[in-house]
Amino acid sequence: MNAPPQGPGPAPAAESQPRTIVFVDDEEAILSSLRSLFRRSGHHLHAFGNAREALQFVSSVHVDLVISDLRMPEMTGVEFLNRVAAVNPGAVRLILSGYEDKTIVMNALAKGLAQHFILKPWNDPELKALVEQSLARLSDLRRQRLEKILGSIDSIPSSPNFQSKLHELLSRTNVSLDILAKEIETNPPIVAKLLRVANSVYYSSRKSVTTVREAVTFIGTEYVAGLVAAMEAFHGFNNTSSAMAEEQIDALWTQAVKRSTIVKLIVKQWPGFGPANQVHIASLLQDIGFAVRMCSEEEKYAQFIELCNGGAMTRYEADASVFGITHDDVGAALLEYWNLPSDIVSGVAQHHRRCEGNAFVQVLQIAGILEGSDPLAPHDPAITPLVSEWREKIASELPAELTTEKP
Image 1 (tube, one colour):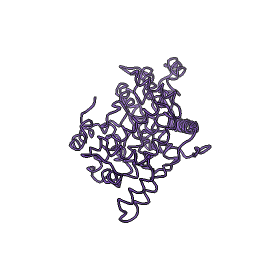
Image 2 (cartoon, helix red, strand yellow; image 1 turned 90 degrees about the vertical axis):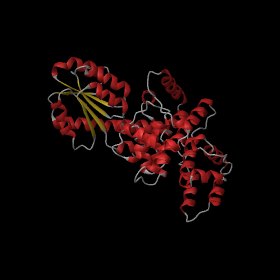
Image 3 (cartoon, one colour; image 1 turned 60 degrees about the horizontal axis):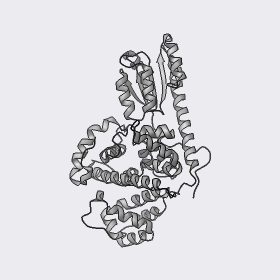
Image 4 (cartoon, helix red, strand yellow; image 1 turned 60 degrees about the vertical axis):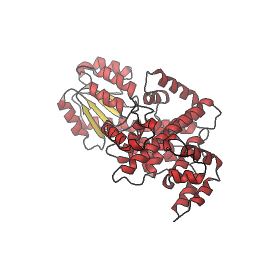
């Protein structure tokens, strides 16, 4: 098996994206100054005059850096930062306050609620430098964690290879279904998984699919190569004999197939959406970061499941708490290591973050919500109105178990 590259490698796709920065202060003049200072930074800026509204936002999407005042009505800056640390532990937290709050600030820094203190009034160049240095340091820490995670895996499966033969066949003009089916039949494990998917309730077959040719026809030739690649990728990690690993991998794969079914239905009706095969692959692989750690850090994964089942944390919060970096970053790093197309890597990296109008990411997030296995998963609040709209649009084509809105 291939080992991960040694030493510094290319940054995961997530790191090449603009960062999300949140400003919190009850004085509009302060917020206006901060927005103006960072307007040309290229980062996504979000300003709140109310700590509760800011907390709701930080709890729902991935945030990279928070700058918060201490003296605010309803919720103090210390309480706010304490809760930010719980719901978005990877975010850099900076305190913005006057000299009179120095004792409170020092206590907050000592407790790890913030990394830096910015004294009002601030020096613009110094504040900009501090923010960029903090974000650069955050990138370095995430990269180190990713390299440690990938390096800790005894054997990372090679990039899915069998599907490349299918791509080559499909690129030929007028390739017959018989030739394509014959190639797939040379790989019995793939045949078994392909027939299982074709006969799943999510594909709503009216009759039993018993041959590879029928499966390819039913699934669609444009999706087969991507589906096979995802099968190889997902199941390539499970080299253990652990019953828990097998159960968890199967559960992740079932959710991925449900999600990909919804993606196919959405992109058929999404105006101007390009080729659907890449977003289909991304929907299948967006949770592969969980599979990586399930089979490489099983004891930690058991702790993660215990935290999720306990109800004290959401799945995403428990992910960050136990592993120090979330599955979306892990998955994106792995797919980039495999040299998958950048749209797929970026889609996996951003499927819990701000969409910023990116239709590829919007489709992934809408499908994830409609699939419904993790209703508390972070997503861009801007897509919330689209979820009901798309539920209604594709309802007639969805299997019954996916048409009921979950809480």
